[in-house]
Length: 470
Image 1 (cartoon, one colour):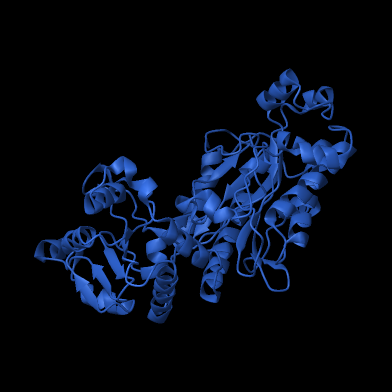
Image 2 (cartoon, one colour):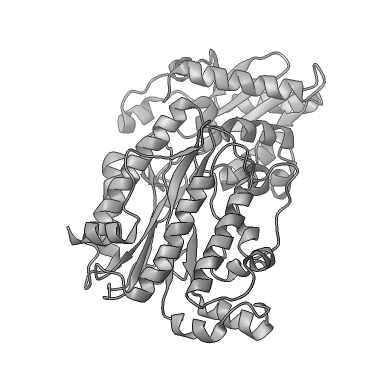
């Protein structure tokens, strides 16, 4: 945990924001339900516990079966959890009291977990607003439904938009203590990717490399920040299969991140030639993606929207693809029509922090888009998860990619989507190419931007080949 004043100040700011959004005396209560354990095969054999990220942000207590109520009208805070009994002590040993846990994060009032029901139902009976965030777990959904007396299916839609907006406004801008933790997670991510690069060689099963990478994250942190993507079929964007034997002459896309012990995430992608050296064809496309990554970083600064950066990268990508004969025509027109979506059907990046896709459980558009922005329907641009005007403290990913997806190319060819800009005949020889993605984690600073972590993974093609030869 951070030191307790950080949590005290975060909750104080949240209460102030909520008080300002409602008439005096009518703001109600804020209800937070932490995660609980989920059985894997049976109750006592649970999946690895991961606390809710918004709970961690405001309360820091990384344990199951906890809840809290913050009263916006009178400023009181109550933590709900149970002290252990002798049956628990036999299996777990003596544990700190709930009161001491509350004190560690600046909450003086505590009560048993079961007492939460009466507190929330009293507020409901009095007609006071009960604000809660949209849940992502089954238990939290059912618990909230019971507490506020609504059908479980209605819980996500009944979540408080005022609370969501207040939380997003706070968590979007990372403070110094958070940036230090993300740097730490990036250092761990650097190490796991280095282990992977050193292990890539023909004849090895992909799973062996994944195991070595994830071993790094478990020995020094909480584990991976998302299921590892390691594949010779990078044209499948989220390929989680790791059963293939590495073949020479392929491109290995490794998209993987670490979660440190404070639960902050990293997320890097590198694409490696499985034999240690790029072919001429691979290097041509790789260089385009590398140039796009560098352009995105050079443009990232306060005041620009990440949508503008995405579109600039799309134009740069089309310029590179035009140079090798895969598209033709006016670059501005192709960019406006979304032709780049054929080659990069995803957005340039997303927010990152306590979640690798930070706060997307609260609503992707609320997190990634300013109120005056609307989401595009174009392939690629429509998948941009972070489009906002950038401010210092934003943490985002910079992850351009080029993929040759035969089924998508054939669909565009069949339907005439390329509008005369796509050289489908030339693309036929790329059907077995795969894909390339290059991703860094970036902090927006008052002066511009910096890449997170103490070191940058090799990214320029000569540097990648040199690192693979060591």
